[in-house]
Image (cartoon, one colour):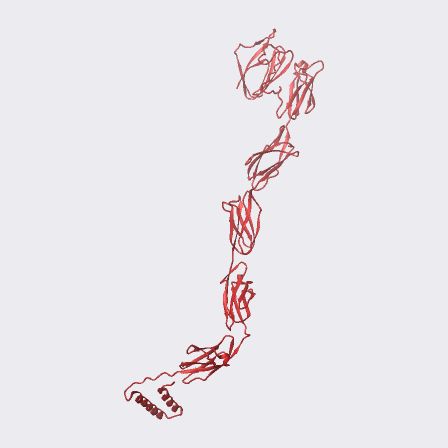
Length: 558
């Protein structure tokens, strides 16, 4: 609908278009304005404001069945939208001069042209016509990217909703679903050991493809844990898919966190300990791994060696542990179950000396071998006298038992000796033509020491067989020539024979002090002291002094 002003001005404009002279045009314009003022204001002096001129864009979407209900968008100098009526007609009114674009749309349809541009410049634009074509077979694409590449590449991407499909992201993390009809869908990526943000996305296809359906991939991590029985403070190392190290707590517990899927090896260690098992293989595959257990055992070692010539020797170990063992027939010995520490190995065998006498050994994380010794047999001598010298000198003395030998007592005192004898039991038997000996033989045992002149007794025997009735303190009188032996707190022995008196031979072993008296045998068999009664001679013995010629033990002072 147009107002009067618009209509009158239109007449004026039409005259101008008909090439009226400028003068006539101005005169006519003034006349029209005067008439307007007169008719509106009834002759009153009223000021009139001209109205801004507007225009309308109209058009049709055909065919009617496809075009009706289509949406048309206006953009440019103004923005608006409208819907085509049941005949497919549409319009945008009250538009000022300017440039405009009209774009039709309807689900399942395409339009030709897709859009049209019109310019209004003081006149109504021509009709805009569009053709709508149904696209019932039209398909679209949904696409996106999983980033970063390390997490997204190779991921499975699932499409669900109006249709279902699955694809795999390429090496750059890109994926796409093609041939998708309009409808509602959900896109969900998955990959072992990887989490995605968001976990899924809803997508609506409405006549157009949809891109940029993107996700962020983050590496999923897990934990490997376990316990070492008896392994508090043990070092635990992880190798394989990652390299880590930790220390077991006071209860032996350990754990490694932040681990991706993969294969790993767990290995415990602690000085002085062994572990069962020594290591374990672990596979992380989308879940934590627990119960990786070990048993720690105190590590033990051995000390071994050989004693050359030492079969049957006793070997002792002292120090961090104490034990003893016996060398086998080849002289080999071994001490097992020893912890780290310092030890001393000492071999011993009666009748043998060892070189060296002992050895210091340090065990530090490994067994020690070749702790060797050399055993050398000890030899001793066995000696004595045959009295009186008139019968003993030149006598034959035979040795039998552990060794056999013959010696001739050649010196004037009837002394004899056997040397180089090993430990063992022996019998000494003298013989001399025209003489008999008392005793006829004697048994002697050598056991790791030099042979004394008299047999060692058990500390309580007192065998005294020397002439003279007053030896009742030590024994009784018997005729002939005798040996005597005593062991009392230490070793000592005596020997007597008849000559002009009773001669004694005393041998001492130890640090002892003796109070001695000297006697001489009288014709009636009694003993006469050489010094007044109560007179004492005191001697300090160093274990090797020999006292002869009529000394009689009075008492022993310690």
